[in-house]
Image (cartoon, rainbow, N blue to C red; front, side, top):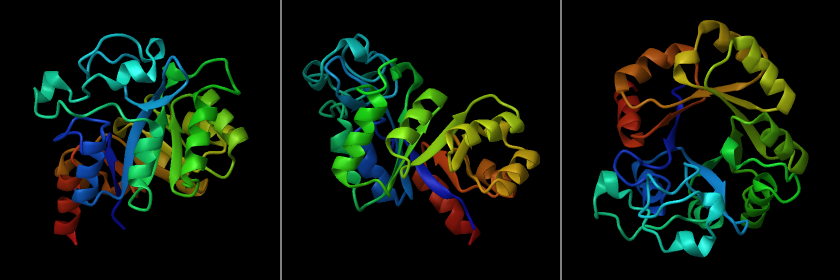
Length: 248
C-alpha cells in the first residue's frame, strides 16, 4: 500500500502556508490528510501559524503570545516575502476556523509547537486545542502531534481517545519507541533522515504507525517505499499523489 499523503501546512509550495487557501488547495489536489501548526495568542486563542513570531509569514512583527487575536487578525498572512501581494487577503486562521473548513473533507493533524507549551496544564494550548477539537466534533478525525512529550502527556490525560503522534528530529530507534510508549502514541513521525530498517521493524513490532516529513521529490518518495510508511508529509501533495498514481 502506498503511504497516505499529508499536506504539510496545506499545499504550501504553491499557496501561503497554514492559511485556509492552502488547505483548500490541498483538498483540491486530493490530499489524504492536512497538517498544520498551532500557537497560543496573548488572549488565549489557538491560531494556525508555525513560528513563535508573526514576522516571517505575515505583514506584522512580534511574538504570537504577545499579540491578541484581534491584533493578529488585521495582518495579512499572505507570506509577502515569498508570494508578494498575490495572497494579501489571507488571514491567520483560528483553530476553530480551520477545523470547520476541513470537517468531513479530510483528516487533520494538528501540531502543537513546543514553544507554545507552558506550565499551565489546565488553561494552556493543549487544553484549548482539545476543546476546539471537541467543539468541532472531530475527535475521530484529528491527530494531535508534537515534539514535546509534556504536551502529548497532557493531551493523553485530557483526551485519551484522540490519536497522538510523537514527532522526532534526532533520536535512536530505541528512543523513538520509548517516547511513543511514554505518551501512549499510536503514531511516530521521525524526520526522513532518521528512517532505517531497524526503526521500521521495531515500529511494526510495537504496532505503531510510521510516518515522515518532508518529502517533495517523487524519486525520494520511491526510495522511501521500503519503510512501509503510513504517511508522508509534503509541501507538494499534488505532485506526490501524481507519482503514486503513476506507480499503480
